[in-house]
Length: 589
Image 1 (cartoon, rainbow, N blue to C red):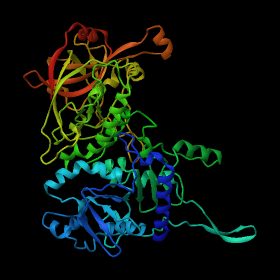
Image 2: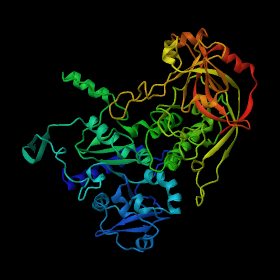
Image 3: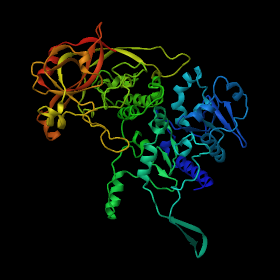
Image 4: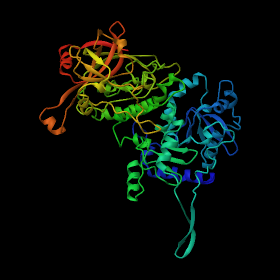
């Protein structure tokens, strides 16, 4: 497909999306409809003219703009805006030739007749206080853009002359037939038929979902909040919005694996198709498919698997999503939905370093997927998943889950310097003062060798870990994985009464010395019911088992504790210990 055809296809797709997809013009936060041709512009934009491009101060102005998602490389560094060249650029001087990536993006905007494009490395003054203020606004910039250009293909690499608009041999159909199109006996044009040489789903997963670009933390938020995205890859280009599955420029839909398998079975050409995650990422995060609170945990799980060059950006790079989905959570709670039985529910949700106050009992029991890694340098407290430098997830939510831990107060760091009138998502919560019960428990390595492991696996929500992004298989091995521990009553080391997973060795928080294992402290966070057999019969006969959701902690003095891990306990003797003790006030840091 030639560049002119790309431009025409992009224009048709955008117009069709805006006219037909109401959800693609609504803010995540409050569901309010906005006109993408008339939105508040970012602080600065690149103004695109017929002959050039220049940096403009657009704060307070309205209009239409496009954003760009790209990975930084040495070429990007060459063209970035810095304190030393900012005054010259903002004075109206033409930016001149930029990287091939940026020039192509500007060319697309120019040919579509759009006045502005926003590129982070040019529109934000790098290495200055401007970055510290603008980074919190980037989520809003991407959400309100007409569309986002995602440069994944050859132009994403610092190769001289390489362009993501360059034709690729893989894009051209190998078999093409032209047939005459006639209407009432008069030839009106031609119809082209071609043989599809590539599976759109597999190409999208390999070239988009598993691309180097989409392994980056900042890019995850850019993709999540953009209403429309155009992916330029080295083999195929795709269009994705919030209302439909992604599609190629040739209108090949990225179908779910189940439909693909059904088609191959129908035509007798079945072969193994890996069941891979995120075939349509944007559809997975729409409110029509789940509640905003549940979607948040999917966001956190996906984001935690990405990487950041600057680890201090761990909070900032997800703040735009936190603000948008936090407002949606507030709206849900305000409508009377959510957990009414728990005392944590408030009209206005409080964001606590990646978790939400009204769902804190579930948020605290995050689990790590990989072996221990160094704590994140972003300054997040140990009880937050943001403190862990690696992938995390959560056990399935308990249908009858009840909170057991109550947050009394929270201590937060000061707002970042120069940041004004921004939501609480930009502030790191440092510690929580909570009221809960706490008990010593025995943890023993090697849950897979314990008795009753089958019962644990079937009924007690042992975590299911996501497949490797490249192969679709588990990333865990016996040598390098974070295997579950068995949890026992200190007086019954041979009876497995639960499971635990640690992001930090439980030995550092050892409460007592025993030859059977490590005795550490467990804090009761929430309770749920479970059991074997049919759920309706189980509930009617009251055959369910009480399960305690806990976090494991170490004492660091002054009634202050640091999280070591999380798990679940069903042993009656341990649970009775929690029930006998009175709640105490402790500080989680």
